[in-house]
Length: 287
Image 1 (tube, helix red, strand yellow):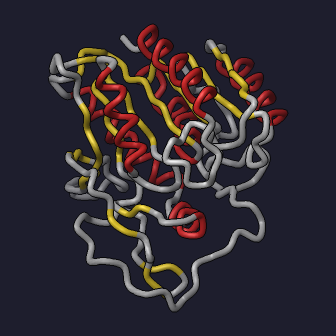
Image 2 (cartoon, helix red, strand yellow; image 1 turned 90 degrees about the vertical axis):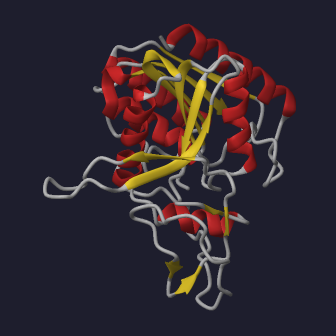
């Protein structure tokens, strides 16, 4: 992934990122539909990636075109608090898919009193390694991810288990980029946006549509999105949107919050601090 701020319509993958070989063995038979815009095949061969066991809900997607029949469904993981209802939060996955870690983020938010929905932007696929993750991310157009997230926002706000009139959103890596895009595109529907080291194809060029308060969590040792670029982004959002913006920086590498630790970057102390700040922020802002 690129170090700088990519366009919302372009994919920021570091030059030379390895691609999947064309003769990979077939994946297991799908148990969930493919996400619109995704394809089982890459460069002529199927993914090795497995399927997530964490889909437990569906929601209608907005039409791509005015003449569409409107029957497409998105899939995701929904967690509700013990009380049965709470403020709504959209959780946006990393480039790995809806992993145990993303399910756990939803469950932890539910334990804090939120109703949390993680839309499955990869249609059920979960990557086994960085090659697969990069390939799957490259197959998801930014506009398609935004369409699925828009459907997730409307669905969450329609649920009896959601008490808020707006939603918050939190996301990691690729999902952090989509957090910023969602805030820019959904305006007043999103009251709080929490990107963790946001990168990827969805990071906006402009932030004039942002109405949400934004709390960012970024890494001083992040080679994918260097802290100098993150500080420029923070200032750009503040100047263009007039929204409340605060970025925190941690002595840690990219993906320091992921306790599954797929790339050895998990930092427990920094992750705990960032999480406590994020939860407090969401509780304060999502009404």
